Image (cartoon, rainbow over all chains, first blue to last red; front, side, top):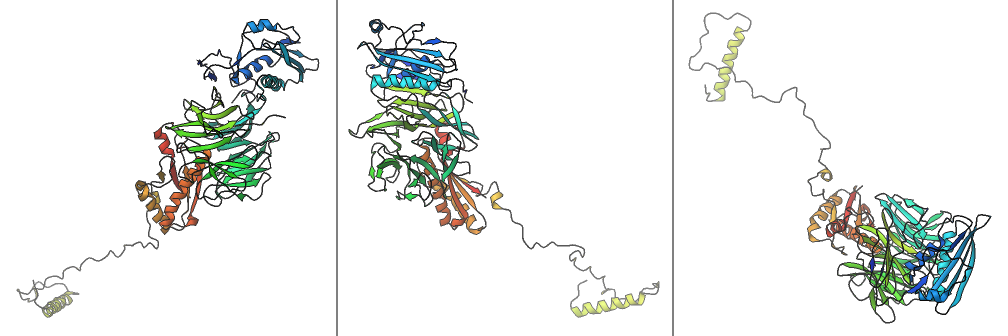
Length: 429
Length: 184
């Protein structure tokens, strides 16, 4: 199984350059493509550590987060730790190529907790732009490192960071061994929420970041459960005659859309997330599935083959005003809308490849976001800048991410088994 | 000797009988009784052999039939219908298979089946779950047209979740685009 004492994404820092494919032996591959490299050069020298060994390398976690975003490239900083309180020679760093500098310290306290401090400097404007201290338990060291990386990211890009968020995904270890796991966004701390001898599908985070909905075949048919992660409590919310699947939370968490075959062909229904009677939204006689709420909660995107082959459609919450959204190619499935509502992504079959496509809903422009060919299950990061999805490499199921401007791609492989069906959790409170 | 008439037969029989009766309890005399050389009564031919009086013929009140479902070479041995990519229509080459099961179910009302629909690994899992369901429903629809009843047939889908083969090429995918008829 996955080790819990260290990240099972090997988050190696790689030398990056224009059009360089850097392939490591291990599990993370970062590829940067695109015209010019608009990456922000940043220096994150080693943090000063006082009072003994720190169980987590705070500065390494921060560096790995910044690199993995694809927005930053690291300036060489040597091996000498620089404390947070040091006077930082910004012109010197600027001459080394850095536009921003982060310095920090970690000091073990008498009660076993750690005082983490950092300062962020803009080497171009020659001024400090952020500084904070955290008092952290051992257990929260990684989380607080991610919080610092989020602050750096936000200060320098204007966009909220997602390094402190979590993801959930399904792992198949054997023909009769399936797990629903939750980990940090960088893959560290994988924890098993559900272990089953039967398949698990379509995990979906509740907006509260504490519950997951998913489909389980443990009773020999697909049933939708809602599962509270902290307690392990769960209950079947949709267990009607036939198949129950494709759970999708409304943005306020009060409703859930599901796909049911209780009345015939797979159709979309709306339910209270507490349970109760479903209200039928589609009745086309064709397959209608994969409902997905728009972020404003006013419409639902879905997959339907009412036109012959599967395409993406949109309808209002009462099920009316159905409009077709995709027109290119004969197979477009799994609609996901960006948090700002401007971009739709989906999986499209073109020339026998299944790839995640993005559609700018304003301009109608479509862009392929990946270079893999068996893509599934795209999921937006809550800041809308990254997409997590599942694909297959050398016959194994792996996760991958792509930036929504198509420039940055990463691949994430588990040590064993097939990993799939990722879902990105919300911003943490 | 050939006897012309039954009467002649009877005469000879009676004469023979008279001779036998006459000889029954007394030793045979040396001198032969006067018999006409020409129409000497031949010994009666043995009666035609009938059933052995000790044989026992078994009667079955429920004559035993071979269950066609169990016949590995029979038309019902095949239980899987295969499909094209993203299709759920039952192709011509599978009509005989479906007809055989349909007719069997029509005459065996006590038989129940589950039709399990599957899909290959490509594309959306949820869409594949629905596609598998459509495949199972398509086979069910054909069976009921042939006389099976709705109550005899349940349909479920496993989508791409329970592949028969784990390869990642067309040969494997073709195997997994499938509806299986499972007798309960």
